[in-house]
Image 1: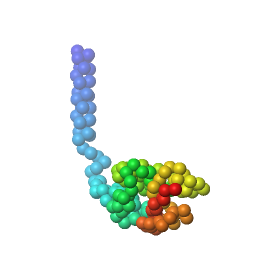
Image 2: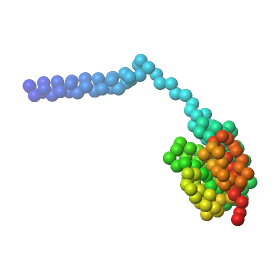
Image 3: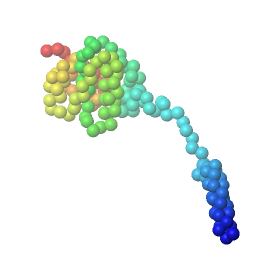
Image 4: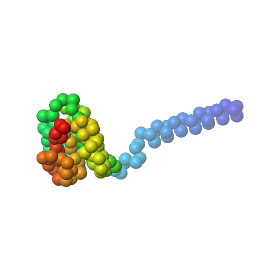
Length: 156
């Protein structure tokens, strides 16, 4: 009889625990006093926003695509930048734009003393510089923004 009574109390305890567990799970205690607001972050995550923020280039996607449009398919395009800076993100976006146009992007460290030689060895027909002033070896550079310039590399 005592054993049966113990089993009944254990069953009651488990049922109460189950009811409390279900009740606690159905009430979101931490969200009763506040609600999170979710907003569309699309405009801040676009490539144009990256170009504008880091390179001061308005309508960057269109302007870079137009710059790349006249280059021969399959040719190399150099992208000069200082590695380890936030501009690596923009360099990757420019490389992606070049790749979409059927070009072969090559990243070159802008602070290397032999940057011009590296671009020549890569066989690049054009180059972007993400370091403000165009390098002195750029012939007739096109300044797209205060931080971005473009130049065609003449064949030797």
